[in-house]
Amino acid sequence: MMNSSFRTIVFDGEKLQLIDQTKLPAELCYLVVNDEQDAFQAIRSMKVRGAPAIGMTAAYGLYLGLRKHAHKDHEVFYKELYVQSVYLKSARPTAVNLAWAVDRMVAVAQRHPNDLVATTLERLKSEAESIQDEDERACRAMGVHLLEFIKEDMGILTHCNTGALATSQYGTALAGFYVAHEEGITIHVYADETRPVLQGARLTAWELQRAGIDVTLICDNMAATVMAQGKIQAVMVGADRIAANGDTANKIGTHQVAILAKHFHIPFYVVAPWSTIDPKTQSGLDIPIEERSAQEVIEWGGIQTAPKDIHVYNPAFDVTPHELITAIVTEKGTYHPPFKFL
Image (cartoon, rainbow, N blue to C red; front, side, top):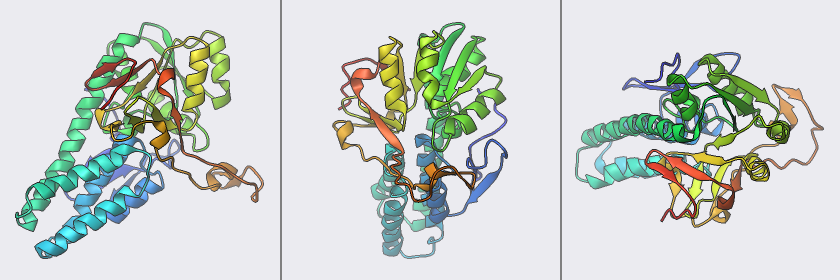
């Protein structure tokens, strides 16, 4: 198992603790989630981020929020279940894992509609814990599958953060780096800074350096240069939603990296758990793209970096067309074009 000095998500049966990722890399500290409102705020403010991690946070948040209503009668409790589930799913719209985890929790309650409220709560607690356990196993499996594409001394470009901070352990795309490191395979990781919130600079660089993996931070607009210089032999990124045809939504800037990889004949791999695949979404055109505040673009750390009254467009994600993707790696295995996730 991965030897990590931190855990992103820690549940002790009574409360949920999350690394406050807005504090990294300067400070490693945890925030406490006591109910669905705390979970919503942590997800919305990106104190916790990464598609699998926000799904787990929502699942635990739903259980903790409903625990406050343990004394209510059956009808009131179930009404609260549906209200809280809708509320949590609205925190961020693009990552399908959020809705997947919440819907899975609701389905558990619906399968046993005549149970006592206390029994339903225990089932929900167990289901949230199962989601986390399954994520740990899935991440490790993705890392093992990625070894097929990782060779000694190769350079790999990644975008945003897809590591232990985005999941329960190991990560998705970064899982391959951790497993390679465990196997004694030397790799050289290049991490895009990932504007405007700098998840690559603040998070990916931090966790890989902490793990002893060779990592070099580059600005987003340097990707073409390092590719042209022959420093990159593969690109590995995560995903927030994968459509039935393989179109993939991921952090803004991923699409342009895929275009560059195609130009330089570099394989481009998407790595995500099966829960990220949304067969109900036919193509990338149907994926809702979250837009975030202008403040993320015109300020950093409270320092103004652009005119305050400037017009800003700040989509949090973009969609990489399936024809630019070499393969999609999940815990179930590797999938090559043509992608048909129906």
